[in-house]
Amino acid sequence: MKRILLGVLLFIIGGVLPVHASFDKAMQDYTEGNFPEAYRSFDALAAIGDYSSAFNIGVMYFRGEYVQRDPVEAWAWMQLAASESGSQEMVATADKIFAKLPPEAQATAQLRFEALLQTHGKEKVLDDLNPVMLSDEECDIDRTPVHKDQPRYPREELRRGRFGRVVVDYLVMPSGHVRDVTVAESTAPSFAKAAGKSALSYRYEPVALTEPTSGIKTAITFSINGRVSNKNRLVAELNEWKEKAEGGDAVAQYVYAYRLGVFRSFRKHMKGVDLEYQTANKWYLEAAQRGMPHAQFEIGRNMVMGRGCKADVENGLKWISAAAVAGVPAAQNYLATSTGAMPEVARREHAIRWLKNASLNGHYFSGLLLAWELVSGPERASAEELTLAKELVAAEPEDYFDQVRILETRAAVAAAEADFKTAQRLQKQAIESAERLDWDLRDVHHRQDAYLRSEKWSGPYYYDIGLEPAMEQASVN
Image (cartoon, rainbow, N blue to C red):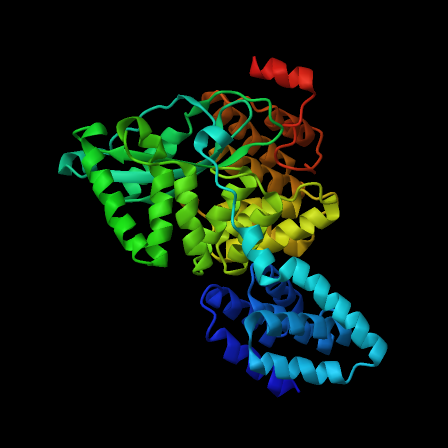
């Protein structure tokens, strides 16, 4: 039976393009005996309509791998995969298992199969994963920038007359300043450094929120002739990618959508160009359905946040989870930091699992977050956790420019080792950096108070963001 089932799995995936890479990763975990990770991956992929993964869930129930052995549940998942994919091999395997069930178990299995059709059937999945598109005016979720310092043109690049462009990604705090500035792409390291430092000065209109606004992208151009003179170049670039996208190239569909989002920061210079979120969403969706994990992350995040579409957290997270399974660090980071009302113990376990995946993929920011989680729990960090946290904070920042978070994380690691003098020194540097940037960060002082009392810090990084309404309003004013 084992040889037959795996043969079906490997045969089916050959014809399934949308989640090929993701499925391969899940199968690798399965064949290596990492059943918890494999099950979670198959579950995430089945939620976006991958019926090879749905069949594999049935296999795991049939064998009792990670889940308790349950032939009824096994048949229901296998039958779902067989009926929705049309695979005769799957049908034959499911029929063999069904024939061995007692009559009462067959009735129960049939009911379970019908329930799965209601949640994982092809029509239901397609309906759920297609966002309800809205114009920018209908969703109106953009934060309004009120100040942006222009970056200094790198001298060497200026001397050579080089054009440069950088895309920075960051979140905006309720009070209006930015955090976690990351360079997503750049034409040269010197341009990236100049743009990253400049982005730290950005200010937005304060809003009465209790959490940061994430996923803000801004394009910064470096041109001797000025930004406006580059309009023709930007439009030509967009049109080139659009032509490839219309030809069915999934990579081009993703890049075109991504460029539309990035160039929104040039809207006043690109009048007549459709830069609406919903336009980008249409292409992200095309690419996501064709199996582009990065596009799956972008359309999922836009669905969660209601950018260019009706907000849909549940189904947006399905796309993001699929991207995370495929190994997209930004998606793994998002899942780690977007845990809602999850109980603290479960939240930390969930966050650490995804942050480890992202940091192993070379994502510096996730490594920093992982170090924080390892040392800021209610219990004393183990020797192994401390060693890993120290390695993570010792790494050189790669395209990441929030020095305050870096210093605070290093201070938290030092405090977890009971080295409070070092923690106090690093925290003082973080406070000074925040003051130079004119950031309103009560958290940095709370943590310094703890270190002065020779106490390690326990709790979330954005500790003081959920203020009482009166205090929040005072801060906004």
